[in-house]
Amino acid sequence: MLRLPKFRYLQPASLTEAVGMIADGGPDAMFVAGGTDLYPNMKRRQQMPKIVIGLAQLEELRAIKGKPKEEVILGAGLTLNEVAEDSRIQNAYPAVAKATGLISTPLLRNMGSIGGNLLLDTRCNYYNQNYEWRKAIHFCMKKDGDICWVAPSSPR
Image (cartoon, rainbow, N blue to C red; front, side, top):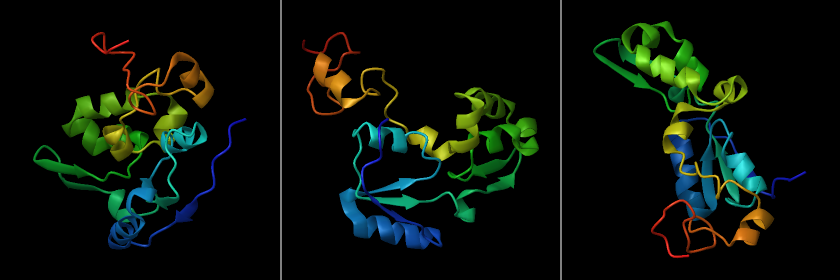
């Protein structure tokens, strides 16, 4: 079983405090809300933050604001299911509700945040593997290498 590396977990009480924490942590710090991507990547040693700043409890990131059919702002901390099942979104933006309801599995939709899914940069079968697997085929350019196995024009 892959285990998480050691890290320090911080839980800010406000968005302002979270911004201060990430500024203080610099490149050694990362935000987490749902954690459905970050924690598996940490287990595979693809991302190794020394500080993880939890955002899931920040209410200001879990709100849906605005007037449907005019302007709606989705908080980045909302889960995919919260967006998919919200009647305001279903009525005013049915495609958004439908799309978020089709992402991944029910378990991951209940945990994964809308912000994390929009910012996700690792949807690649060559990158999303453990260290030994990646080492065996030669590392890709996303982590430790200079080859993109997906792009046909990448040098081999």
